[in-house]
Length: 301
Image 1 (cartoon, rainbow, N blue to C red):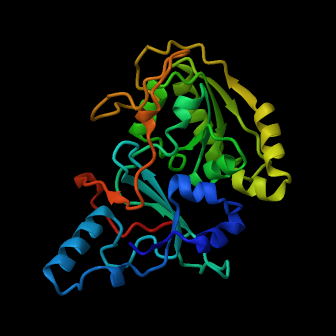
Image 2 (cartoon, rainbow, N blue to C red):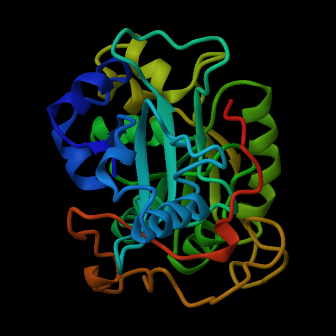
Image 3 (cartoon, rainbow, N blue to C red):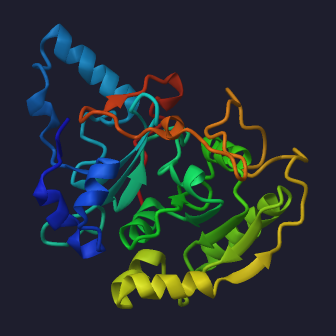
């Protein structure tokens, strides 16, 4: 689909400190090199028209038929059971490291956010690091902190992520949001929702104006620096709420759809890892979803 998954992707990821073969393999990272149209049947054929319409509906193509993630390092968020792409994040990254003033910098597929990145983390531990964006979460992962996931921006706490927290027995969350006004507001917004479910909340204190990725690039060795911040994270709430009290929930409002658990972990219980399988084949299948119809050209900021 016009995505490179070779060593060239690792070279492009070097400026972000994410040049890890394990990261690429585990989460199927790729680079959108703008060659998708050359790999499809001719646009003048019935098959070519059909597949382009499907890709446009999914948000891979924009209404203008340009690739939505052209020139981006792309991070898919996969369904752990089927391997279908539920969400995708793109971060503009170029060989010369220069991004034009009017070019998109990063963004997601159009439509409601879906899926949970690194859902294995909810089974592996009762503590979790929650980042603001996937680049930051991958930064922790590369440095050895595997119990990490991310929201999709400060307002992107998806229903799927809400269900993962509500059903996995997480006892403590480390909010590793950007140290800026938006990050501060997000901490204030989500802390009561975690607390009412009995989840302890700690804030990772990056230097003012910095995020996890920037911090890891500037403070070396990164693993030791991030470990220090986690150990010294500020206690925001001890989480004395009732985990079963219902209420509006973490994301605010109902989860909608099927409330079947994403993970069935209870403290001390053995949870089958098949519930969080992430061994889908190399072909990424797009999940069919009418809600994923592009609402606009979606300017990525």
